[in-house]
Length: 183
Image 1: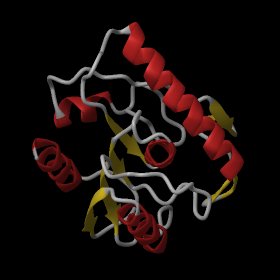
Image 2 (image 1 turned 180 degrees about the horizontal axis):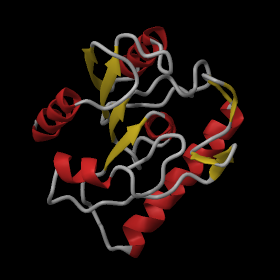
Image 3 (image 1 turned 135 degrees about the vertical axis):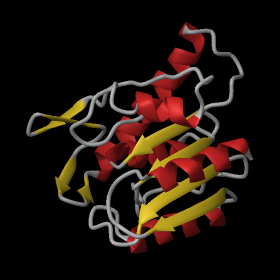
Image 4 (image 1 turned 90 degrees about the horizontal axis):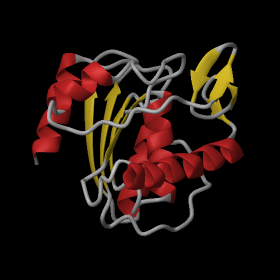
């Protein structure tokens, strides 16, 4: 569970329970701060990511997941990275860069985290659910569509769910994610 800007490791625990009350949950805290708010990676301006830092932090998240699997003896349990906003973006970046470590992503209000910077990674075993608002100023649909196209071109199974409204997680989003997980 990967929180959004200004969040903590506790923010999405209710969402985790709503998605799958039986799931084992890992919920780290973003290691970057911006004006006192927790984030997963630096940005240069609103909507402008420090792409070098995105790569670094996605590598760190992949290392954390690998270490947590060993430490908590999670073995071959299926891993689904669930993120909101900045958390969705780092989940997507990690899946793009480390698909065997983060093979499945549910991205609430995420966007393309690494435009033009992703290696030609095989994503045939990757599945992604993108849940976005049609009028989200924080995650423009052009970026979401470019991400979906790139994921699909590399073999990922992508489902997009659009809703009216902007940035956030709605009850309809949660229902869509529950259905996606069930499949």
